[in-house]
Length: 413
Image: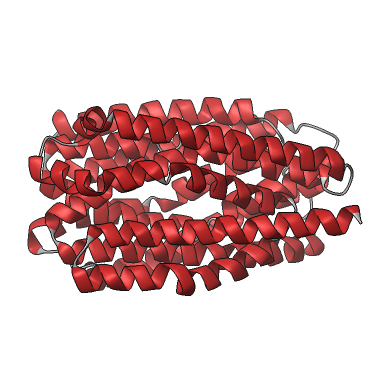
C-alpha cells in the first residue's frame, strides 16, 4: 500500500497546487513510469530467484544475484541518461504536450532521469529483501522513504516554490535513501562464511537471470506501452482529460499495488515450494486468490460510496471532477476482476513461468487493448482508454487461470 502512496500524495498535492502542473505531472510521471516498469524484471526476477536460492541454502548465489541486479540497474540508468535526455523534446511532441505544461513537465522529467539510478537501486534492494523473506524490513524501509518523499514534496511545492522539479528531487532523494538503508540491512543479515564483496559472480547465475529477465522485460514492455499510449491518448483529448487521467491512474495503481502484496507473496512462496510441496502451494495459491477477491470488493465499495471524498483529495477543479465522475462507476465495478488478475501474475512468477506471461501479454495487447484504444482516438473518449486497460487485465486473468490450472494438473498427474 505504501509503495504507490508517494505518487498518490504527489498527485494530490500538485492537483490542489495547479491543474496545468497536474497535467504536466501526468506526462512526466508516465514517461518515467515507462522507464521504471520496463525494467520490472529488477522487481520480479530477484524475488523469485533469491527466494529459490535461499531455500536451497546457496548464499553465494544470493550474493551473485544481488550484485548482478545492482550492476544492471546502474548500467540501465547510465544508458537511459545517454539515450533519453538528448531526445526528450521529441518525447514531449509525441505525447502532444502543449506549451502551457511543457516547462513544468521538463523540470520534473529531467531531474527524474538524472536520478533514476536511485529509484532502480531502491527497487532492487526491496526485491532482494523480499526474496529473503524479510518483508518486515522492506516494509520499514518503504515507510521511511514514503514519509520523506511526502514531506519533501510538500515543502518543495508550498514553501520553497521549486515546482515539479522539487517534487522530482524529493522522489529521487527518498528512493536513494531507501536504497542505502536497504543495502546496509542486507549486509547485516547476510553475514556468513561467504562475504558479499568476496562472492564470485557465476556464469550460470547470469544465464538463468538473463533468461528470466528477458521474458519479464517483454511482458513489462507491453504493460508499459499500455500506460504510455493511454496517457498519450488522454493528452490528445485535452488538458482537463489529461489531468483527470492522472488522478484515475493513481487511484487505479494504488489499488493494484495494494493487491501486489498478495502477488509478491505468491512469488516468494512459489519460489520455495513449487519443487518441494505442490499440494500445500496450490492451497496457498487458492487462499491468495480469495484474498484478492476480498480486496477487490473493499476497493469497489470504497470507490463507489466515497467518490466525492476521494476526488476532493486530488483536486477542486469542477471540470476535472465532472470528467472523472462520468467514468467513475466503471472504475469502481472492475476492481474485483482486476485484483484477481494482479494476484494471478504473482502466482505465475512463483512457478517460474515468465515465458508464458510474456507471450500472453503480447497477444493480449493486440487482441484486447489496441481495439479499444483506437476507439478512444476516434471518439476522443477517456472512457474507452480505461475500457482498454480493463480489457487487457481481463485477458491476463483468463490466460493466467488456464496456465495455473494446467500446470498443477500436469504436476499432480
